[in-house]
Length: 383
Image (cartoon, rainbow, N blue to C red; front, top):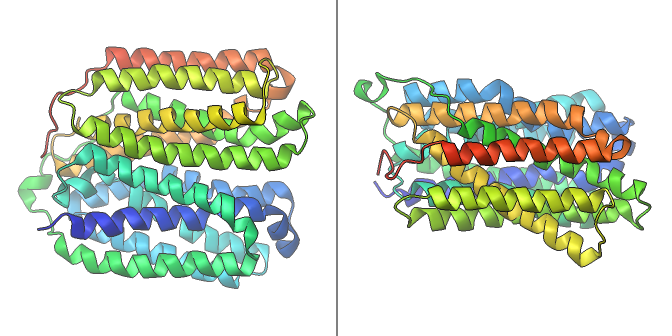
């Protein structure tokens, strides 16, 4: 079987799913007016995917392990198309809420079991393919955050639905190339915790937290056009995340052992996040260029580290089916962090900035230490 027949539409579907999702960010004021709802209620729509990942990751991993990638990926396509179609028709809060919730559930069934999806599709370049998939998801988010403001709300919703429909149909056709696993492949299915989950939790939760508090922090510092700058920086972080996942996933693919690359990325992420925290709390002199560069690099290093840690979590599996269950556990842990840490720690950026910086750095220091003490396998378990 030619693995590209599955990999290409799988990666592109991750892109269009991300694109359809984060286009909401620049449209928040318009959606508030359209649905007659407060800001907090609209921001909930953007965070839906995180809750969906917490709820759906483990079921998606188990389903993939027992039945192979075809059923959960088919389910992801159906959820995305139905949810996004309903979203184009939603003109009240309840209807929009239901549509967005349906579309959000596509995320765990597409991304959470990625370890099994790639292995059972006979993809050989696992690190590069993992990086490419995660990178394209973030590239879609970043691109839509930056260009959706140039279109009307109605046009954006229809564009999101149409591109998901086209690529979704392509992926459904390609899934016929994946064989259903036999009994010997699933007999030892189990989820294996590893320290890599902690790294995923810290990187994802702190990234979301910084993205969520940047505009408020810049406004507190009385920086001109704080809202515009905050949106741009979020988009640059997403684009940096796409670059980091793709580039470092590809680099790791040619290395016999990626432990030094993982550790280097951990240190670079720590340093870049430290500089970002100093910038948005006013403890470091800044310019627009400095902001742009540091937020972009934080995305590059952070998501490169996240992606390689995700693949290391998959390689702890006993078999191909369990690999997806391990990445599902990694995704669940990451999004539990997203649901908890920004809410608790985020407000401190204004009320107690020194405490906010300290706790953020401690979380990353612990994660860097874990990347040094956790064994990195020299060879992929399935190639």
